Image (cartoon, rainbow, N blue to C red; front, top):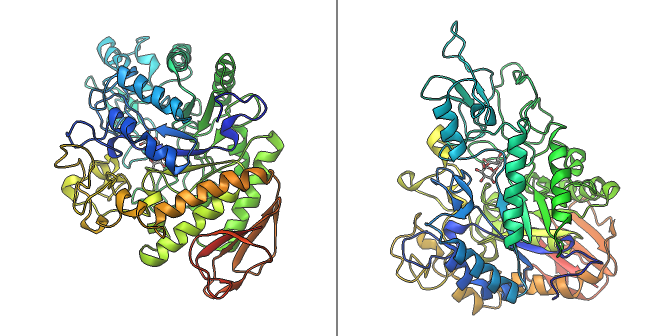
Length: 532
Ligand code: TEU
């Protein structure tokens, strides 16, 4: 693989592996994953067959939201290592032909960031406070926040500073939202982008990309009678809410696109096809496509499949809707089934044997589609959402609402052995969240030895994607294979996914790969196959 191909930027068809840094591999025995741990496992990712890694935030942070509360955007938290460790990681990754995507968090800082500390010290009406969204208390209603917005993590989106002014936080109270209407904020983030681009970043994942600007005036959210204000598309109990159109003065304001036009220019100045992918929970495919116009970001996560029910019709709508949305702006589509914020897809699809069969089938289907795919650490092992005992839960949404939260998809990876901590790191006794006893047999070591394991399946599927799907062009044609079967062709490849309950006939052709065993030449329920 070359690191520079001007005709076809690498990210347009890459498979990117998401590393949740705390939970991937521990190098120093403190129970928390770290950068040297990732470096030691890079050959595993090369052999898996991915093209790039996105590593969740490793900046200096008090870790109230596990790094999404950044205190210093230009340094590495000692919990995860040092800048030199980050440099060493990237050098090794590049040697192995893997690119590296940095997670940028521009919507908010940590309350321990020097700017927020200065804002608190400087007091009401100061230029330092204007970098955030402070509002005075109404003496007639001192306990009434400035508007009815709620935090994505539950509870009000406003807290009081020690001197009694309100400040806005769409996430935890330790994550004050920045005021992007203040030009200092944009200048600071341009410097941060350049800091990592100058060092080595191949790309950025933009956290809460749809959030930076709030509707000027900060009006109340209009809420239907009997409903409560909400800022999230994923419920705090981590079930999905549908992407029905809601009034969202806190998200997706037109001004945000100016930021991405500026960042586009910055990325253009660097060689090597540097890229940016937006995490934007937009309400329609069209509003997602706005983030990937030719002069803005390169990609946006497409959460529509992740939100869809298990049904051929729903999946078909996702495929056609996604392709139709990105086509007019010339962007490449993206596909994702799991990440560190949502219930793992094997569990969403019902768990157990059936959940795993469906998860493998959905993954195989996703990997056949044009564009790029994002996979989340542990899904290649078929891991399910883990039950985490309350005393180990750390997600701020759990602390704010008492709902289980996201810890169950963030449990450390089982590498080898028959009991916890499953080789999480040399000397690790107790990972930061305990791993379930049911993970014995699911370790990387065990699964590498078993050709039928989910890991062996992922390796075959990624190899097939390189060998077959990459050649198949970008055009997709939906094929009618009955109400329960999603079917499409891409070049000479035909892809079928059986969402029904009875085996379905397979189309003509030689089977390239299937997500599970076939049944007398038929495609069983909850199974997908590629044919040529
Ligand atoms: O998540 C952003 C996001 O928009 C959330 O609504 C997401 O749906 C939620 O976390 C699910 O409950 C990003 C990160 O991916 C997440 O881990 C961070 O906690 C959050 O931003 C704040 O930085």
